[in-house]
Image (tube, rainbow, N blue to C red):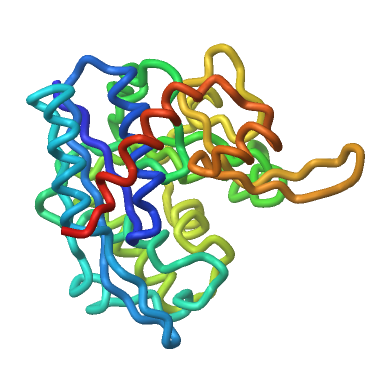
Length: 279
């Protein structure tokens, strides 16, 4: 069974996509089909460059060396995005690329089931059980947001605010009920904090809460499947905000004290320059 994985980003997300993909390949013997959604955007004079087609092809070659059935498809959705841009959220603290996933229902190449991953995710264990999670009458499945579950509620009696960094998407259902159509309408007309994640939480009625191990945003446990390198708050010995990404190897070691990914990051360090070379 092929497992379909979706990333979104510009050229600056190359490192994250590479690390995440390398980690995925280490923890499955099933074929992977990686989809990278990208676009060329200009926002307030800032020109964002798309994920490189050359890099995508080199990554595809790398994956096929590991398993001839692995595939990587780069999809440029510039025209699709600009035909209906999220006007109210184009200049937030988050880049517009975080909202590309909200156009997934319009992309015929994407299959009925896809696992969306942020580019600061590292896979630690087999994710087959997550990918095969039953999705009957469910549009999306995700883990509660570590901080947001306390601050944002759409039901009074239980936690329901999910972190969209690991999101199992039932595109067959979404295409029928118009979830992403309504999300796009919302972000076009209303400013939102973390627009993509907030829109999904506000609009989605058919969502499933997954165990924390599938999107660990705080403290890694022995059963953690995906570690998400999100921004965290530290209170000792003084309050500070810590943001460390997997490709910031020195910070991973020094600030987070993490060394379990050293083999993975050594592979990344050797491969990254070759993938980014200009032809």
